[in-house]
Length: 185
Image (cartoon, rainbow, N blue to C red):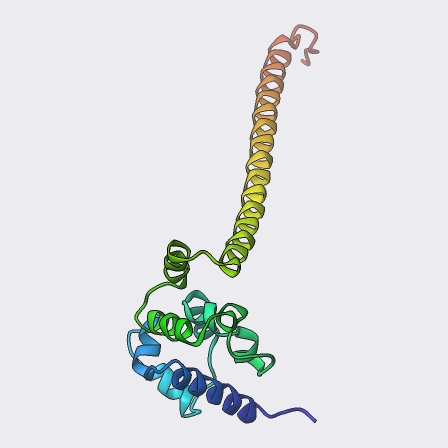
């Protein structure tokens, strides 16, 4: 038996309420961090007047909340609410991170401050993972760049071939003998 849309909306709305409560924020501030000019969208979701839209989830993913709140949990209730990053932190550090996020400060700012004060293995591991992801993206960018260069060279060769063929066609048309045309009359 599948859930109705109303039940799904109610469950997601309840999870958004939980985020707002656990992050000790308000719907207004939550909306502000997500980049909404007004909190009406958040209020409508909380009051189950509408389902969260693609735009909502896109804003959530682009916000710092995505570094502390598990998106899978938000979408369908699976897993833990807090990300692995948050669960590894002490309670005091969790409070600092949530407060930073509520005030628009990036999670990476907290990570850098932690690294300066006392580098820990979790931070190093997170940065190593991020570094590997960036290396992969750089390799992909290099691959695309090289592919574009090869395509540009091929386009240049094709343009030259077209120019050569056009010249040959003009020369062949100019060399055509007109003296052998039969005269009728």
